Length: 297
Image 1 (cartoon, helix red, strand yellow):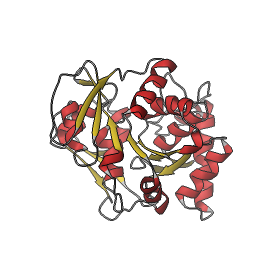
Image 2: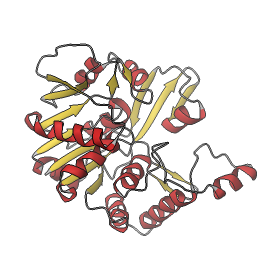
Image 3: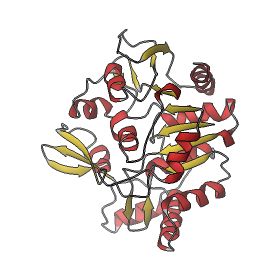
């Protein structure tokens, strides 16, 4: 059994490779929910959706969010009517949010709602929200505090980041399904998602205990820069160097090995093995190769 800790970027590409080389029923994906929010039409869970769309073969690989070949008629009409729509949500994507919201309003827990949708999509791997408790990512900038979507989309990552914190994390606990999945896993893989905004909320939850002897992580930094997104700014805001050494520092004590790209400078960190390979996943062959490489360590 394999447990994978995932955000909405980077790790879904690795998941495409993993399900090609491992029986999907042996994989449990534990997904960040610190970016979730209620929207007027339903419950928005961007990282969960990206993982679901990826594993069901529907992901828009040009943007790495939403559904490929989706239409945006509702979004356009709302903008025309003067509504504030900073998220470019497609019609079929919006249907997913509406359905999840209806399940939650009926009294289902978030893990139950996600599992119902996972099975409806025909996904064999398990997908678990990190918690049923509310956690919100807050970005502190010179222009004030904002959620992650406002920072990424409305401000296009242009603002400096003074601090990033997770509102509600002190009282949030991992679900029993999550703690059981980690405990029962033969291997725990921390995917190449943003180590601060995607992974730190998961590993900061109450009840999370990871045996470092069976845990490996993949750095999302290549050639000294994040493959995508503002991971470097977020790492600096939390006091870490914006490189793979900083990634290793965030995961220190949780992992026995950090896999970094061949383009990364050599470095040592006590208690962690650093192994190099190609981590850029441009093709399906790259994704399978990285998955096999990780499983062989």
